[in-house]
Image (cartoon, rainbow, N blue to C red):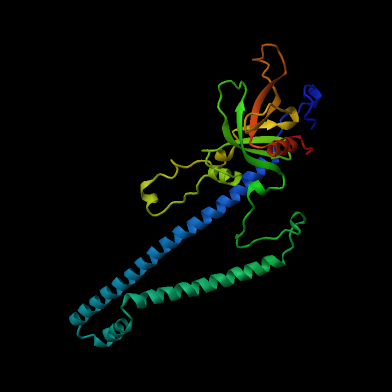
Length: 308
């Protein structure tokens, strides 16, 4: 990109510039959301399982008490059948009746079933290891248990620079400076994300503030809240508020303010022929960016003028 020259030649104009980092960022965050959702859902399911186990123990305890009482009454009614009722009564009486013993029996049955299930999973894993992966998957390690994480999108190799910066759009008169999270990628695109407040000191803190919380149904919310009504598409919250195609832009220094340094980006964009008064195919838009040091200014301009 020749950033010093004005990209006015129609042959140099880049159309439909899509940034790979946006796709990669959404993929990384989707994996992170799935992992968080799995952890929270597992915790809630553990609570449900505990409740079910407690109810099952209580049910077995009450059932044994009812059967004992029933057979006792039957024994009184059918005194002529002691050889039949006596073995059944002895079997029921000999069974432990306290809740702790019943819970131990239930837990033992669960462990036996879990051991069988684990053995089946191990056998399946051994069979899958013997299978040859396709040519497109050679050399790729697989996490069969799903316990893996991706790095933050801010650590991506296709990201050149990310930091908090102040901006304002043309016309500049009477417009305040606004703090945004600015990101420059290898696709020659500058992305601006609106941050909720100015209290963040690092780009990582600002990016985490943009990430929506993962909410899973709990025993309380499932009864009182309509989850479909409160559902939001998480990826819409990670959409840049504005993007500049640097291949169609020029970057220029501006007069420094007190304790601050500024530079201006002028981007050439396509116009709508139906609304253009002069029938021009392109027009321009400008944005001013402000940093607190000369070194920061040089770093930003170098990143935006770098050959991608």
